[in-house]
Amino acid sequence: MPSFIRLAVSMVLLSGAGCANDETTFETELLLPARPASFDALFLRVSVRPTLAFEEDWTNSLLPDLIELTNEPQTHTFSVVSGNDPADLGLKLEFCEDADCEAEECIVGDERCGLARPEDPIGEVWIGVETPFYEGQTTRLSVALPLLPGCLDALCSEFTDPAVFADSSRAEERQLDMLCDLDGSFPRAVWRCTVPRCSVGCVSAPNVGSEGSCTEDMGRSGPHLCEAALEP
Image 1 (cartoon, one colour):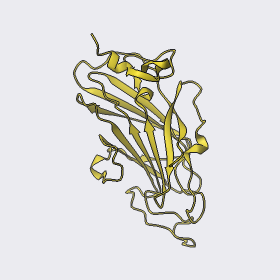
Image 2 (cartoon, rainbow, N blue to C red):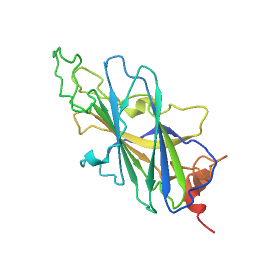
Image 3 (cartoon, helix red, strand yellow):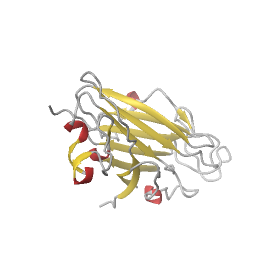
Image 4 (cartoon, rainbow, N blue to C red):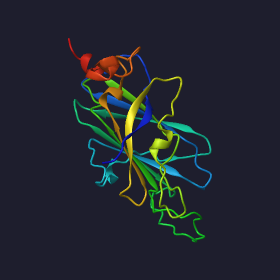
């Protein structure tokens, strides 16, 4: 059985009104690190689907914006608008050396690409968000990645593990937990992560003074604040 670790996830605590109709909006903020010095170029493509079947083809689920990592950390935000749908949401983050995410494998001694690495994507983060949609409400999540999934040696026999930065945090924001595990069944670094529903912020009912966005046990259990906001 895999040993799950905790990766810090920060919720941005905002106040404001929910949507005036039945649509629900899930806002995501990605806090990305600087491009490692070993890469001449590195890109991130993001896919979103109402499913947690990450092994399937997600080609038709790509967001239009391709993110190029630079020598400075950056923030990327996007929103997902849905109807009154209680489904879970999957976020797939793929890191690639080629802008089309089609770079081929590089073996030891190949002068064309320097360090050995698997084919694109060289690393992925699969994030399953539990029930982020509530009728007429806006939810929000901020995910910090101070380290990228990738190889630790020239043969790609070892990969970066999310446990390395499990205790990382942003002092100005309240920290919650996202459970992550390094999946060793792929020839590249794949992190499987789960965001519990109480770790998804509710914009119209911020969890000021608690540790989560639910109504019981200091915000870590019970109905979600956005769900409670729907009650008359």
